[in-house]
Image (cartoon, rainbow, N blue to C red; front, side, top):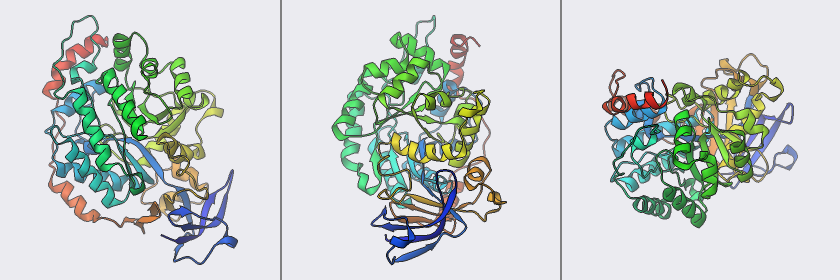
Length: 466
């Protein structure tokens, strides 16, 4: 675990410097050559950019099996279609978690937040399977079992109609018991595995579920995660259910605090933004899925100006169709150049890198130990190969990383001081075997409109005025 990275390019406040970095006992020890002790291992950092590992702060690993096939639908109909696919097996959960981890590592991420879809009746087995996959790859994982206690039809506003819904197949208390069991069995921050309480969102969750999750969060000091106001339909639904905005309601019932990260946050007003800033909640920006599903563009520059912490997520691979974190960072940065006229507030490449690393760490309540190259922080590090064709000619390395279309540029990566990528390849698992398994277990097929989506479509169009 003790090694030195020699002659790496490291960003300073407004420039770069070539530096030696020593890692001792999994942490960044000292960062000045004159203080370095003789290391066990020397890594050549010449012509390489060293950055803290990024955090893929919101995804759904199991959606890998539907990427490229989902219809061009808004979220509510897209979700109905997703529900119609055959239930996953635990082996598919395992393979898709491996795939998500590998793609994240090879695009600069050393931590993943997996809002994990659970197999009904095999909830703890599903979580155990994801834990096994992430441990094998060696990525730092925050596993956030996706839970709800209301049926899918409840997620669409009623409008002027009287809607009745089938009760959810599992009670609220049964769901909370499963999460507490998962915490007792699997939560181990020191081993890089964290369990997160994660109700899917206001559209499919009761107050009792949110409050029960907050209680578990307080009891075990767990992070909290949820989707929030991804679509206009959810904005309408919140007003129907609560008579106020979803953000106001979540604040009233005690779900928002410094451990809370909220995916999307596309449709918030100024008062909502103030509440997020006051409660120190984090917004996870998922630009690609928001565009793919027509959800809108989150006002990220307004969040930053208000002091709200912002991080980046890929979202699931069937609403983004990729787990390329660098792609999400690029689009999530320059997208706002067309929504905000004042270019002095636009997101710079260095802003983006800080949001992707430290912003993600703060959102997971680990900003004091991750997210920067400060001495004493954990060694979650990535070396980028600056001789790669997609990072040439030599101009601004971080500018090229964020604004370019970099490919095959991650030379090395470490998680908690352990090397998991070397010479551009993940070293902890057999990636060729993973690729073969994913190929063999899938088949070519065309997009199709599901029965559930068809049943909901006319009502959705009516309440949304389409």
